[in-house]
Image 1: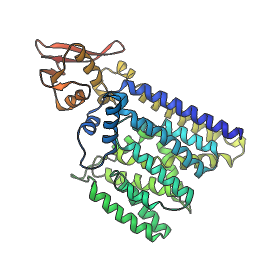
Image 2 (image 1 turned 135 degrees about the vertical axis):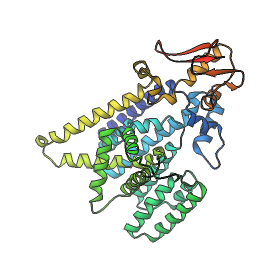
Image 3 (image 1 turned 90 degrees about the vertical axis):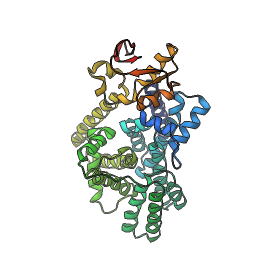
Image 4 (image 1 turned 120 degrees about the horizontal axis):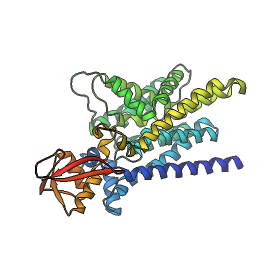
Length: 395
């Protein structure tokens, strides 16, 4: 009983620490062009990111906190679901807590916790689906039908279920998955276009940023180990199919990794299981060679995560701010504040920045705003921590 209380106390502490860090990061970000498009452009079909962010800003006002609040709350729920799924799959509550910790530390998860996208809702329903299957050993067909109408990403889940049903000889699941896959494709479609180009290295580089490099390598190793196992959990089928699909698609075109990365997170309980089972079968004096790579992996993970959370201070150390990895998520809010202070309510600029400024109450019209020097133009410098990051010119 005391052990259970300790585990749940640590879980609450983890959630509070994660939410506190994300709230700090939230205050540093500006809306990006992609996020502004989701927010302002009415989707052709149901879009959780659009409707939830619009509803939140309608209730709490049009600001960054309200914009990102639905995704922050989803992150809270997803962490609990990851803990519960791991508890059911791994049996030991301490292992489940470690899975939740790893989930909260992954850079891609923290990005999904704040950015306006459907990644959070895809993670939520994927974890919920796997929990039901793991707990009851039954397929929740009503939930699968619902998923077909939520997001195009779930086409990949139905595809994974096709292969799972074939290996498990589940005819009903096979037929339902094929029908729902076709329905999802009809409603949303999946963009496969252009001439074949090699983006394989780019895709893997992106995945390394989502997981951190060493965690990603261990993720690949875990999928390989389960590939050779006699019995494979449903989570493996989903994560493996998602990875193979990303790899195959990246041979032809640039892949929107954010669409498929949520399914790869199902590898977290698998990685935790593989590591601790390998560690515990050995006597304490022979565990060092397992602990040293673990510490190295954990340190690299913390370093990559710190880079994400300290992305704003990093501007001070980068000579060319345009080369900052998260440049598109900054500047706009500070520029809008500077314009408001000067009593300027409307400007004309390029379409990307124009849409971003619209969120902060700067409309289209009036003087022209440039990002390069113009004769007779007023300077509007943007400062981070006392350093001029960029300068705009109003004429």
